[in-house]
Amino acid sequence: MATIEEPPWLRLVKAPVIIVNAAGETLVAANEGARRILALPSRLPLPASLVLLIGEEAVEALEASTRDKREFRIVATCRTRGGFRALCLDGIACDEGFAVTLGHPVPDERAWLESLEEVAAGLPIGLEIYDRDFRPLLCNEVSDHFFDYPDVHMDHHDDWWGLAFPDEGDRRHAFLEWHERIAEARADQGRSRSAEWKVRCADGLDRNFEFRFRFVGDLYTVVFWDVTERRRLEEEWREYACTDVLTGLCNRRHFFEQGEVMRRNTDLSHEALSLLMIDIDHFKAINDQHGHAVGDHVLRVVAERCSKALRLGDLLARIGGEEFSVLLPSTGTREAVTIAGRLNRALADYPIECGAVAVDVRISVGGATRTHEGEPLESLLDRADRALYAAKSNGRDRVEFSG
Picture 1 (cartoon, one colour):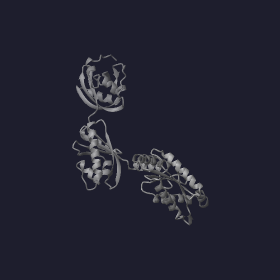
Picture 2 (cartoon, one colour):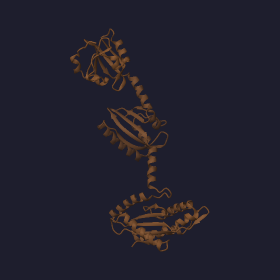
Picture 3 (cartoon, rainbow, N blue to C red):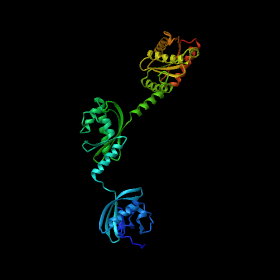
Picture 4 (cartoon, helix red, strand yellow):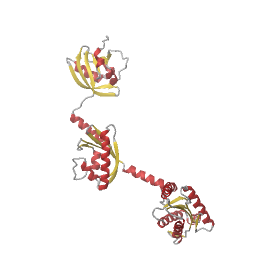
């Protein structure tokens, strides 16, 4: 096949252009843009057969279009760097044959809109598109499922707020946050902005949604998805991580986390802080005599009675086995001793009934009051624990305080 010299003007053209012979079957030359799209080797010897380069279907279309014509426009499926794709081929006759510009096909507007609606309908997330005045242009099926409110026709984005946020305070808060987000999105169209709200849906239920906002030119786009179940599971796991499963009290880990917050707060306010350690007397004998089911019931009732005997703001936790801790903010020794006695009586005055079994339960309590601001919680707990040991050594069913 005879070599054909590349025309000098080809390198000056930025659009991707190839030159084919008059029959449309042979590649004569290609500029850099065309080489990138068609993934042509940089040292490809030319002229070369087009069939091997762009595929048989595209060559057949070219051969048919070059017959007795000076120019043509066709859409053909060509082999490209990203696989076979439809390209728009614009050809015009030249000295070497035809100069063919490669471009993406421009579909019919109606067909394009139908394709867009099909894609939007198949998305597993909500999609809404609005014009520059926030009038709806497209809402997909997921959006309609959640927000197509019965007997309501929404002509503007503003119509949604009163339906999604029945509470005026929630609506005002969300609306202000939205205004901040869309101002940011409008100023920087390269990034989306997000918000999460609990909203009233068309079926009357409240759900948590994560929203993403973005402007594409003058078009305002929103995508969203339901995160209600995820948030519920997160809350369950958070509660599980902080709660003693048997008694429903906070666990040892959460006690120390919250206790450290209380300690710092009382330091800042220069208030007293006391801690009680509670142990159920002869708990092993209860388990041995009546079984672990009764023992578990005793633990639950002890937790319930102690909770009722404490004040709002006191922190009660089961820290292990039959041991409980109480942190008493803004409480000195005298008041802490009174509270410890109240806890003791809450258990001693009435036996705990479990079916036909009535268990006489007693507790020992050890307490300590912070000696100085800044005393670590572990130090306070250690002193209360030593006082508890003294209460058990001195006969149990009593209250002892660290000196």
